[in-house]
Length: 143
Image (tube, rainbow, N blue to C red; front, top):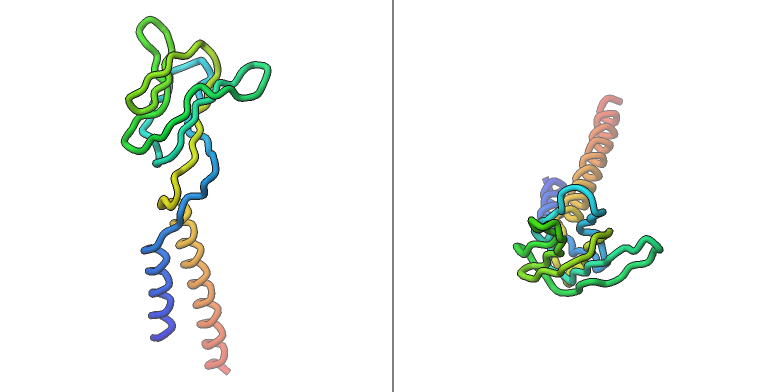
């Protein structure tokens, strides 16, 4: 009974605290000049940067600023065919080309996917140990 209570306490503690996002720049959206221009809700609070990707390589910064959900981030094509980058309530006119939105999360934000992975791993380990212990106890009782 004590072991079960300890295991449940550990799992509850992991779910209640969660994991923080790593503060590394990560891709959000790309637009390669073809198809529908993607526009989404900002996935997290942080510093968002729009880069133009020239054909010769390298990145050229077109916009940098803070955003947080439910602000929109992405691209929008006007009826005249011109392209705008969207960052919350700001529009940045763009020339045809390749663009990439990237963002660095603000500090101490909850990361649901990392928490779920950690909790899942813990549950699998606890179940594995419980199965092994049950097998050993069962074998000992059979002898």
